[in-house]
Length: 160
Image (cartoon, rainbow, N blue to C red; front, side, top):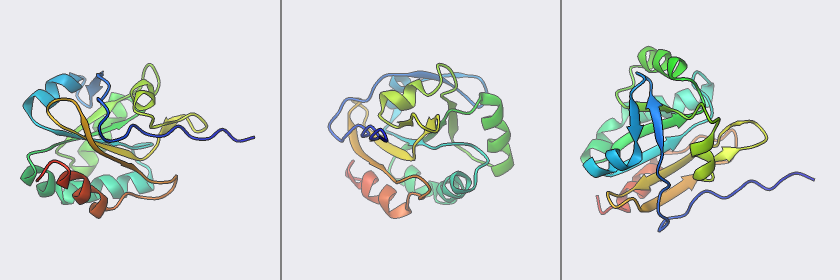
């Protein structure tokens, strides 16, 4: 019998606090990020994979959408900081990529976005306000990219 995937955290839920390192090895805390301005967390399975690269390049190419909304964009995967740095440099990403490397997938699990069968994060997105409340969340099935329209709708949840 196949285990049913855990549901991601819903809008109205308090976002779990976390501390991870970015692609440069700097410690990043959710509370410090959201103290500055709202945050969009983009969980993705793996750096250098086709769908993930397509998704994050589309976000890079439409970064103004997040800036206009006063939003920080942050990607999270189970990759190491070294892998994320190489990928970030290769693709010219101007946003933080966080390594949910060890304990493996702990932050993705806290958000209900960890796929136990494959050992990677699911494609799940969370818009978090400055009070730490999830204002919007969405995910796509395995093998399916998220659309820019889903991001636009989620950003609209902050009144942007």
